[in-house]
Image 1: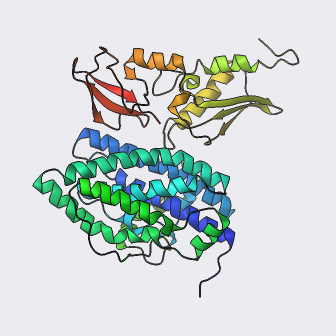
Image 2: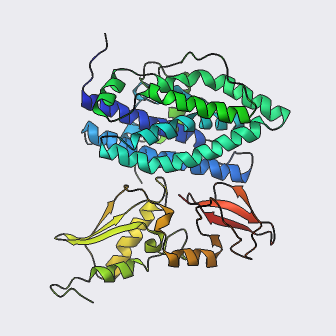
Image 3: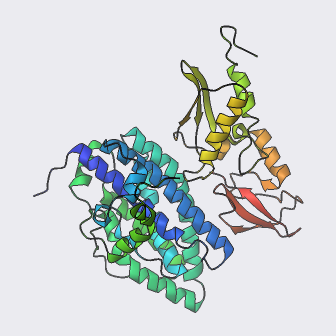
Length: 257
Length: 158
């Protein structure tokens, strides 16, 4: 039996899902700062991370407002533990090599653009406004990540092999984007967010087109590994990421500057 | 210049003052040129200035708020409330013609709906090539002229 979720509770969960995706991926991508293969890519990754952190401030800012306990976006980002996060498992996956980072970005961007585009039609004006702001940035990210996946996939023997390995490694985490639960049911009924499954066909089209151009082969397995967006079972990688990201607030609670 | 009914400076005057506040990262254009000042209104509690961010994570946003407050304080307006508005989202269509011309003079190619600059802002050659979709700030991309060989910034069109 599906548990009934109140609209406020569902809305808060949804905002965490949106904000935690961009927060965790934004942090992951920022780990490249100063380490990318060339300066231009370093700057591109840092700018992408910055956009996602900016989007996080809007989503988690609204989440804190909806929660109504006087918290801020920063409180939600830095003072929750792993089991309170609602991001997709995909975005907490380690960076791996440059190719794996860009493949993860492409898989996320391809979904993110569709999700944000749908959210611009949300019955909640605040959600529609954040989505309209974010979708411009996400569209730009997708242009770049898709182009890089093609360049590396259809590149040298070495880059092709690495991109195929990255796709094989990350693809099992793609299915989670299209899973739904009681939270989604409530949101769809309220017209706040789209049914996740409704985005799958267009997502698959984007993947087929880009990966085809990149001469990469989509793995057979479509079984979804879930547990991130509902917080039931994150991977071990999330905790390690949080120890770095939240270190300052854990060592010096309430520190400001 | 003041309103007839009070000693408050007119809104036109305030827009003029704000047009003298440079963008902190591209100081040849003003905040008004950039199109991020969305509204200016007097209220019972002072002046309300509504700003919109260019990119959601742009780190200049907090400096911009401070610069607006500082500039208005210098003109004697002490009570300023700064509101942030994200809808409708900022677009490069809001760049003023004056701003576009100044960007070009400064060596930054202004945004083009074609997705890239059609000539080098330094030597005017149409032989330009993209180096990276991202540049020195969130709002710019990195291009290069294959005629004069100079790299240059291109203001991304969004």
